[in-house]
Length: 275
Image (cartoon, rainbow, N blue to C red; front, top):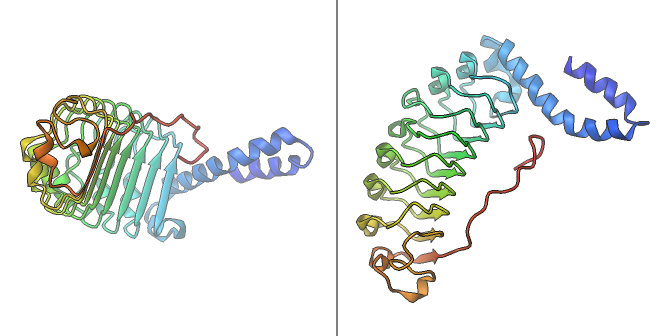
């Protein structure tokens, strides 16, 4: 069906400029949709799909949940799920993605939480990014199983208030970025156990009023970036000032960037353009 529509449009584009413009925008979404239909109609053959052996992206899909057989893609290394407005749940079979190394979930506004269990097989996951999920309020995603994650990014998630206690299980975490999470009001004590954390970035989190006393326990921390800090008296803008109540907590960090411009959310560019 998709191929038939594209073929008809391609025949008309030579004489119809509007069709030509529409076609360029439609092709990418159409091919993504066709891949998704293949995914839905496949059974054991999923593990034989060449385009899904290493990298797979789901964009603008109408599903409320991924199919259970998605877990058959046991050679998958990279998974991107983007602009799936209705997606609200995950199959337990996701733990079968034992080769998965990176995952990005963005602009899935029906998601309110991520599963606490079902991640036991994701032992090779190294990079996880959660972006622009407006109704995501809970991060109970089984961090205790994600011991290989080195890069964690959480951005533009306005309802998240806390990070789960199990964040302390991210024993390989080297970089943590929390960007524009306005209701985040404290950092869990478990973060101080992340002995290899090198980079911490906290931008536009105005509810975070003070830095925890244990900040000095992050022995490997080399880079700290903060903006929109609530109590400017305890940590004034400009790391070179070397004063304020919170200064001793971060004094030993080699690279400090305090008081950067307020982070604003990028303008929506539509589902057919890259972020």
